[in-house]
Length: 280
Length: 280
Image (cartoon, rainbow over the protein chains, first blue to last red):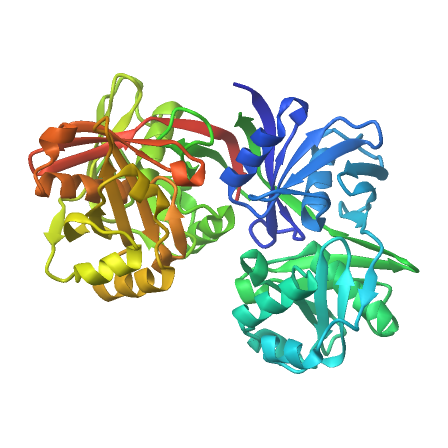
């Protein structure tokens, strides 16, 4: 039996229990893939991560859902980098470092206020495969502007609705959205609005993956940022903005976005809520 | 912000990750009901428990699912008692103690091998409200012997199938079982068989509560024990037996049962997998 340092981190928030949790296991070089998968199934969180030593970065991060290993995922990357700094795996004061993961090397920056930002994979945009009538039927609300299929690692169907009211009354048809998502290879739909105070508000639905609604979704927000850039709304919200997500589920997530030309950085504050050891 | 002792315990197993997890928070007198509910929603486990001081027992245990507080539940009671002994909340060597919970006072014993046993609420049995044809249709397998509705706090539809093969190929119709469960006020169906080596093997399905299959279910096993006693099979399996549950989900739970006349004691071994603190 091994005793490994363990944290459960609440991501995209500065208040415990308002964000999206990730379980983080340190010193995981000695664990087999099968052991990591068992742990990830047992924690019952959307993702559990494992730190291993890396020759291509400051650390190697293995990311597991309860079902399988993931090449990359946003909120586990942000929460794990937060944990790495806190645990001294990355030196205090080091403001930029590299995460090696199955998708490759991810550049990460630590901001002066403690936020972590990660560069997400370059967005690939495809509008032609989507029937906007079908998307409207699945979501039950009309979009303003184009419906785009945006690949940021995971793929999202992304669209904008006209008002906060429309965003929060939305109750997608799960079966229709599942079918549509599977047909185009998407995780689900990320829908946003720009409210009266120019704040981006987001909801992400992934019924095809068994997630009716994701409380605060990293890749969903990256895809929304790519949509905002694509449709020319960057000036309206700013090249650096903080989106809000989770209100429909009693959370209060804040996702920081920085658009630098082709690159999109995503991140925010995190809080370590559980700190201790894991007996494997 | 408070820092409270925290454990995540794997229940009904002596091997990490083979049982059913429960999150346990100590020193929780100062938490509001709303705070406890937020923690229980965030851990994403079937139950999170909170130790408070008691005037009617050795401790008071508040048990929350992600949705609401529960009057009593089996696996959280066993895992929390294990944690209480480990943390010294109950003196080492104390072999019997009392848990106060919303359902009342629950007598608990600590066995020489470390197992915890709790007396479950007296089973109330009602066979007349169930249509065995409907149960057969929902489960997709024929029962041997009566189908009974058994109330052990939660209610379970309980039936026996003839073979291990029948038990493990079972894939209930979720919609039918949900409707049936709601109509009779049951959590779901707990189905068992007595295999060639006289071992009781159990599966518990609760689609009406959003749980397709419970990995290792305390109240489901208590209801199965009541069924075994009711149909006169106690001699075949023994008044003390260890049931197995979880194989269909990659778990390997062992639930110890002791039938003493009207009383049923339920329990088993547990392992603390996460040990640390929770920042509330």
